[in-house]
Length: 283
Ligand code: GUN
Image (cartoon, rainbow, N blue to C red; front, side):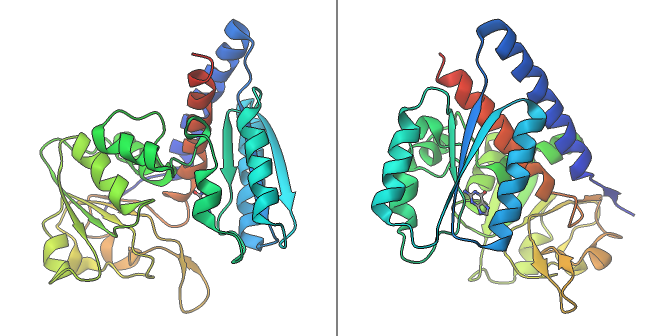
């Protein structure tokens, strides 16, 4: 039976570390990290995420402010808001909650954020920095996966890692981070031939495909570390990951559950990025 990796506990310890460093930054330099969260429209899932981000900011000792804009906000207005936030000294991180309403060009909005305040690490400058291994911010989900592997004492150096999914936000940066830790990495996607056979080579298997219970026991080498980035609903409307937990858990060495695995890590990593942004901007 696999060891279950407890994302809630690891997230709590990352946030505790951030809280301690924040207290020191306040005491030594009089700086309070500040995060501005922008939400446009009334998507219920986005509302829950934004509330959780604000709560986490309060828990670690950050200043945060929310800019809740109506669904019919113009691009011009949103860009004006971001321009103002870019110039503020008390705001170190800017997070525009996605998805935006369809009439707003997401790329234009994201590109308006100063790279130094891009705590999602979505901008080309920050993505490029990951490629060359000289980064300030890491995208929250792949960075959270690395923390989980570390907390579970998974040996990465020289191991075979397989990432299923090639998105700009998860799959691609995940592969880079594993490579920087000296794994031999394969990225799989919808065109990969004999996907289960490729996955069975993996000592570390990261599933980020967005298909409920897609990864079954026949994808998994006995003893492998299996990290599930998925967040889906199963046929009964119950929250589930990209991994068929019941079938994989007896085969894996360690595994993350959904919920309670990667999910809680993303906000902890956002806190870490915002603290880093405050330090960077105060040189
Ligand atoms: N919507 C869902 N996940 C995210 C995220 O990590 N960042 C932003 N900005 N929006 C999201």
